[in-house]
Amino acid sequence: MARGGYEDLPRLMAAMTGDEKHAEAAASTLDVLWVLYDQVLRVTPEMAADRDRCYLSKGHGPQAYYAVLAAKGFLDAGELEMFGAFRSPLGHHPDRVLVPGVEISSGSLGHGLPLAVGTALGLRARGVTSNVWVLLGDGELDEGSNFEAIAYAGRTGLERLHVVVIDNHSASHGWPGGLETRFAVEGWSTERVVGVDHAKLAAACTAPHPGRPRLVVAEVEPTFPDLH
Amino acid sequence: MAGIMRERFAEVATELLDTNERLAVLTADLSAKLFDRARARHPERVLNLGIREQLLISVAGGMALAGMRPIAHSFAPFLVERPFEQIKLDLNHQAVGAVLVSAGASYDIASGGRTHQSPGDVALLSTLPGWTIHVPGHADEAEAMLRAAAASDDPVYLRLSNQTNERPYGTGFRVLRTGEAGTVVAVGPLADPVLAATEGLPVTVVYASTVRPFDRAALRAAVAGQEHPAVVLVEPYLAGTSAQEVGEALRDRPHRVLGLGVAREELRNYGTPRQHAIAHGLGSAGLRRSIVSFLAGTRAA
Image 1 (cartoon, rainbow over the protein chains, first blue to last red):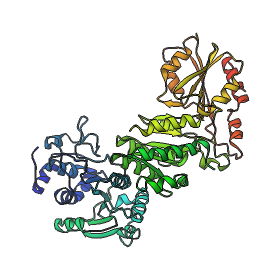
Image 2: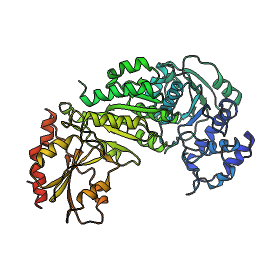
Image 3: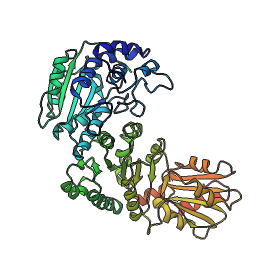
Image 4: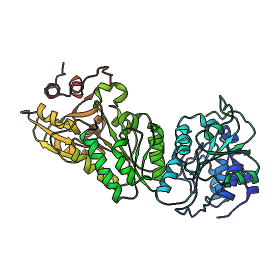
């Protein structure tokens, strides 16, 4: 399959139409997803057993995700035009059973991080040294299930677990003091960076954090709340 | 104190962990002590997550995605009802399986009240595709079911109870007694009360310890000699949970069906499991009254 670069992403995203309510969620995740797939994750379309896993937890606005997967050769760019159609594998929330490269089926908020904790524990038990990454939104942190996972992963020092939270300040009641304080108090290594600066994102995502899980907060421009 | 089935579960799971390196056992504080020895031997595969039942199911799903075979255990309301969306999405929708082993059943924890009872667990799981649902009536049956479940990758629910039959009747559907006047399907621990209730009545008694998939062919065979099949389902959880299965099994045969089991209304009583069984009409006298009246074509008072 043809590969593409960052400059191809706008064209790939334009191939998908509709789903306007999630368009901003898609745009806000584009840079982070690109940096992860381009510079951080050890994963190829062959999907080796010891690949790094990336779980798109929020599942909303998957156009950026599909565009990045197409640019990296996981899925055929020709599929993008059928986005959301009955027989298309590309729904408005991604399905791992249908889309090559998609690791979890998501859309209901608050499932990706707890699933990733399980995968990190499972890989560790099997002696596989893969990293597990989860992409969340700051609004998604409203879901209490995340906090069961944040506390357990932090206190058990699950160092193969990595979270990127896209912070566009969309949580209805906010996170006074910064959302990262909720992770830090449980023992996570945390850093906040500008979410469109690829070099800073890549540096934050590859910084060492021995014995602790890692949180990177990607700060992006506030948008209207992503009501769903 | 843990019941006989739950103790057997811990014993057998502990043994299986030694030989099956894909196997993991997850708890959320409840019963965690029963796995102390296993946890010491396999600290990365026997995990107590604390009182976090949403995480319990999600971690099972995430481990299955990593190629493990997780067994998740808690009391039925906290294993099935509280994290039900996690079961639907983090297991079924991800297309992975796990073994969910519950304790407490419908009213084992009679004095605990409504918070510790979940007679709707089997009905809830029946809304999802692919689940094998075991309702063993004896620790030997539970052990065989656990061993089979650990060796597969399918979604399996194993519903343990402190209520048990005197002896094991086997797995699947088994005909325990034959008669022409009707068929009584006795599920799991209600086999002995049903046998006592139908003593001297000309009815077929079928024992069922696995209710999903429901063995429709076995039921059809059991009613084959009856001109107008009359089927009484006796289930130790929400009454009528398998009535639709009976309807599907006998869709081409005019038939009558009565679903006996735990009532939908809360009792708001405490006491003992036996008192709860009697209150739900699941003691042998209550069962006999309902069965005789149904076979006679009248409504029980």
